Amino acid sequence: MKERRATAGGDTGTARVIGLISDTHGLVRPDVFLALDGVSAIFHAGDVGGREVLHLLEQIAPVQAVFGNTDMADDPGLSRHFTEVVDGLSVHVSHGHELGSPTPAMLLARYEADVIVYGHTHRPLILRSGGRLVVNPGAAGPRRFDLMPTVARLTIRHGLPQAEIIELPA
Image (tube, rainbow, N blue to C red; front, side):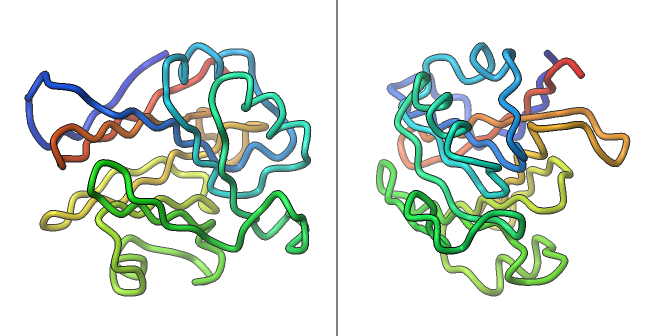
């Protein structure tokens, strides 16, 4: 697994680590368990592909998930979007399809959160804009668009977010 990082600081104090995953489309790769090992929670940014995906991810950590354009909007286990406060920072999660073809600029304009997590494009991305962070963990499910499957880890330490993208074996 390869990692790409965007960091907000080098402090080694106590941190909260959240697993970020999106676009599983019904597939939980075995390497997801290693990539997200030790996280305190998992935020799934949509296109889950069924309750079994959430049950498998719950073996790693508690899961909160939003629905994507391929999920059932009335699934009681999936929200349209949610915002959680994690160590003083607001983390907003949505699939992104509500904006059509989402871009970081569109997401930053629409949502006021410190950290914005989205999926939909299948393209992993970490972008810092001022003190805000936009993260797309990419697609962890079936390989599409000639992109490697990926997940992300969001670390919040002393009010500073950093994210890393982890490539999963295809």
